[in-house]
Image (cartoon, rainbow, N blue to C red; front, side, top):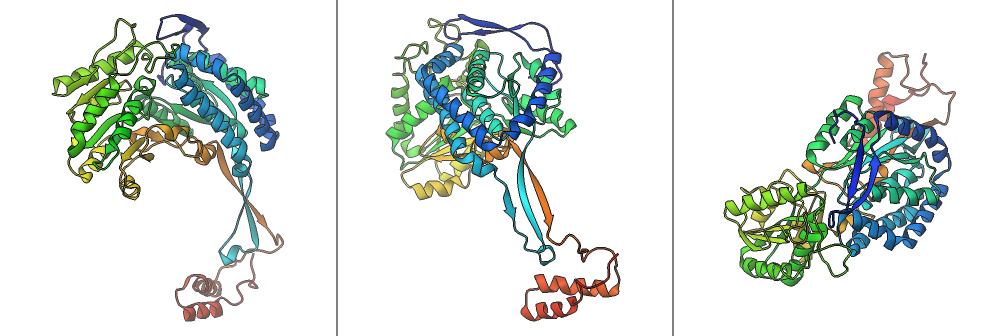
Length: 523
């Protein structure tokens, strides 16, 4: 998305990346239509908020019921538009959304309720405070093509249950998945103006950013995220930015190599590697390096690559030839710098334009682009290390910090090492699946972004805290109001000693000096 681009008249075209089949053509939103959508959302939001959490949760329950009933149909739509196997669409998209709804149905009312705020300061003991969680109003969501159902849906459900209206701009490569989400939400009872789509390319997203929205949630590239952050700063617009990762996997010599190698292969190649949580860097202790390479290679060459609608296939195509070119460039750079190709390494042109063989690279180094830049394709680069501290240093040697994994039979040691890794999530003896844990926050540090989605932290991103202060004795003037003087200064000095002095004697002396502070004359 280019923040400064102009809205252009025209269409976006949805194409099945596995077959080249035209799925549909859609009119691009204009700047005026984007503005109008946001205005409609603002008008509708107040009534939606007034429903209260309980009735909004009931609508989420209906949505969950409808999605479960149509789970296979929705998964097949996702496969047509992304190419991923239908079973992956069920596991990594439909299941994730069903469980996100479950989490909010079970916990949103508690997480959104008002909280009493106790006061510890003696000067404020005659007050009562409450913390309210107010919806922002209109939240704009700009979502990517790699998980075109689960990413926008989980973010949308949190925004809606908190009382916001949502305007979603999906990727121009996967509009049909967003239309499926819209159909389900409206059928469940979400008013049409409370959840709206604006379809189009990056210019439609730019128009949404410039509209009168109250918060923006964006998932995409670092380059685009920085542009959005700069534009949002001009408006003091709050944002959540999930900008991808270069996730490291550390395999210690005591790990179960059969399990760890299976995890590496799945973690690198699920969704053809087009996952922000993919295993994009694998570090293996030198004593088990060769055995691990053999296991990964043997498992990779057995993978079946083809069209996602075929239930026998394991890996589908990349979304577009542009993405394939990035993968090819990274692999070629690694080979030129000395990496060994143990499996794959080339296009599978006989299958179609967008297919690339699942690839295992050995003897990679941090001089190679494959270990520095987000590849977003079916490549597993593996590097040896000698000491655990070297592994931690290599894992942290990245501009990204989304997730990581550590593989060891010693769980407590794994937890100790996890504390040393700079990443939003560190998994011990698992990969990728943290995204499917609805209770767990999703997001990263460094160039991986700002803010969180999912769980209580994700729900908190959809509200702003309002503190309400109640005075229990409204006819009493406050002791700190005007009427200053030498005596009041001495009293307040004593009052502070009474509350905060370390020793009991000093506190008692402070209490004596503070006498009369409540009865003094004030303006």
